[in-house]
Image (cartoon, rainbow, N blue to C red; front, top):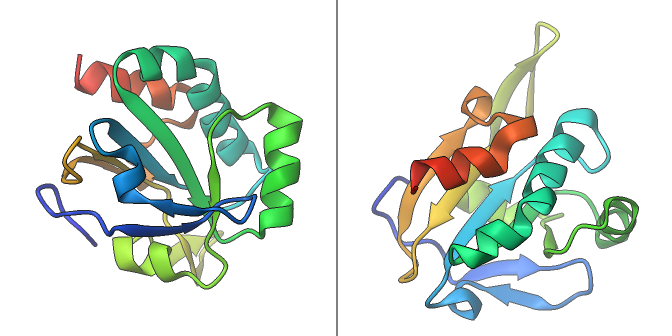
Length: 153
C-alpha cells in the first residue's frame, strides 16, 4: 500500500465515459480518491451519497472527488445516474490502480477469505502527495465527507 508522504501515480484510469483521468488533471487542488467494492451496494451507496451531499462544500474547500471500483463503465453510468453523483468514477476492471494503491487484497467476509477491494480513501494534496489515508473500518460510509472535512478543518 502507498503511505502518507508518497506520490500518487499519474495515470489513474478511465472514467465511466472512457475519458483518461490523470493526477495532473487535479494539480493545484486536493483530490479525494476513494476506492469502494461495488456499485449499488448499501455501504458503497452510502459513501458515494455522503460525498455527493457534501460535494459543494468539498469543492469550496479545494477538493475534487474521484471514485474507483472494479465495476464496468456501464455499471458506473447506471450508478451515477441513479444517485446523481457529480464526480467521475474510474472503471478499474483490470485492477491496475487498485493494486498500485494497495486497495486490493485479502479480506474476510462471512468467515471466508477472499480477494477483493479494501475500502480505502486517499486524500492527495495539490502537489500529488498523499496526505491522509482512511482504510477499511476507518471509513464511516454514511459520514465520509464529514470525516474528510473534519480532518483538515
